[in-house]
Amino acid sequence: MPFIHHVAIWTQQLEKLRTFYTTFFNGKSNHKYVNPSKGFASYFITFEDGCKLEIMQRTDIRNVRNPENHIGLTHLAFSFSTKEDVLKQTELLREHGYSIVGEPRTSGDGYFESVVLDPDGNRIECVYQSTSSC
Image 1 (cartoon, rainbow, N blue to C red):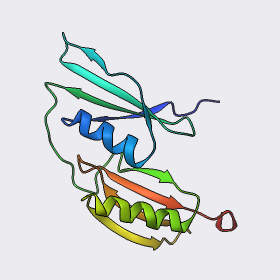
Image 2 (image 1 turned 90 degrees about the vertical axis):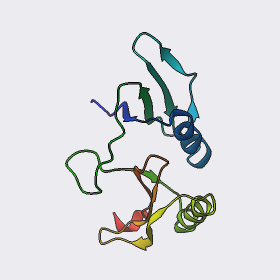
Image 3 (image 1 turned 120 degrees about the vertical axis):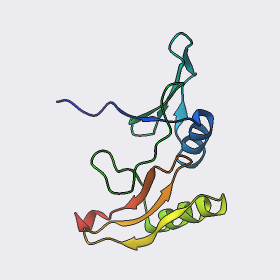
Image 4 (image 1 turned 180 degrees about the vertical axis):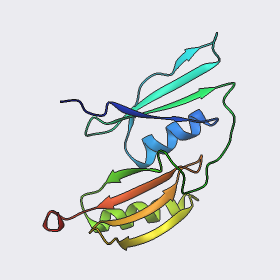
C-alpha cells in the first residue's frame, strides 16, 4: 500500500523553520542539502512516527501568503498523547511568542485541539483524540 512519504513547504526562513519543528515538535533534521546552481537548499525533518516534512528555500520563490481558507494544503496536525499535553504545548508556543489562532477546545468530531502559526504563518494543529471517541 502506498503511504505519504513527506509533505514539503517553501520558506524564506529555512533555519527558523528547522528550529521551530525540531524544538517544539521533536523532529530530527538531516544535514542541509544545497544546490548552488539552482539557488536551492532544504532539510528533511523526520518525526517519531516516521513522517517527514521537507522545508525548502529557493532564491526565485516569492513570499506570497495565502489566506486561511484556500484550495490546497491548509494545515499540518501533530498528535499528542493527552489533553494536558496539548495544553502544555500550546502554552509553551505562546510563551515563545508564536501566535495561537485557535485556543484549545474540543471540536465537533471529537478532537481536543489548538492551532498555532509557525514562523511562516502555516497553520499547525496540536491534537488529541481519545480512543473512545473514534
